Length: 448
Image 1 (tube, helix red, strand yellow):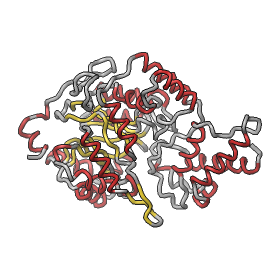
Image 2 (image 1 turned 30 degrees about the horizontal axis):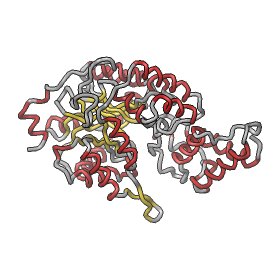
Image 3 (image 1 turned 30 degrees about the vertical axis):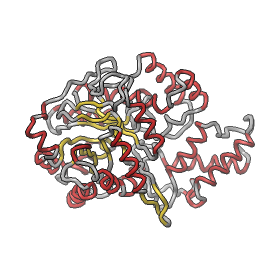
Image 4 (image 1 turned 45 degrees about the vertical axis):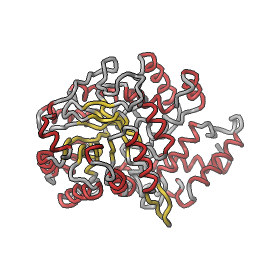
């Protein structure tokens, strides 16, 4: 008997424990005490699903070179999934858009070796390029094939928000997809229907209003949340996560968290901030603070992490085993850290690679990640008057040449703007590439 049939028989659609609306309330957890040696779980109050508080984000599977392209290392994925499953991770989130369309197939190959009822699958309708009903339905059906399943536990409309109702209607209403997906949910092929959000508060309010009126019945929502975005969301249109959480909590909608590490920037922080973390708890990783922040909010069902290798997987499992929510004092400390982090001139890139492939071959996320790493690690040359300027200049130029092939560097951008509509963070990508290209040229000419 699969999970779908079991739920129908047992009537768990209305079961589950209530989740409070503030980090001070008791979490809906199943692992026992904070000293437990088991993974922390949350119970979905809408259907009784017992979901691991740490979820596996499949956007960053390990890759290997295959000629001029990169392919997913399936053996490595299998090893990671085996370790995750054996340590209690049971929620896996993917998309047809991840890793140039390879992510779903790799997830399906790894997970299909386990009983279907032992894990929850989440994927998305990522019809950014072609919104026709034929293409959208084909994408939906292909997900079942790639994931080797006959039902999807958590299905999302991918990245709604940008463009408001007009964009939403184009992708999901005018082509009949929202009605199609409702019927699929009624049939049991979709167990929960929700959306992932990137946008401004007025756009989010629109979808909440549609929910309140009964026009759209969401079962869960996926948002970007971390201790920076909680009150200091960056980008042109991004809304603070505390507002998103408040609105969803008020409606008792389960929340899935994406980007808890803000593309890795909350795992590798500037040295002076890292020192503050280590002074407080030298035995805990810096990343663990960010994950504990997300898990401290009881409406959160699971927190996704794109664990590319075994080291972050082991560390994250350690954080969510015998999970300990943050105290009020620790939350205040993270807000203090967040204020400090906003003072660094980083680019709000989460390395999602939605902007890729660039039609002109520019390695957009690679350029931004190299720049951000240089800023946070203190190898960013700021002016000729700076102490160790010459050394820092050499380090940046050498590492830039090593990290980014010449033909893929920022100065080759022709500002076509093709990338702009794909960026969930609303980064002004051509302008930022030009800024970095100008910075590199000034370093080369020694005119900074």
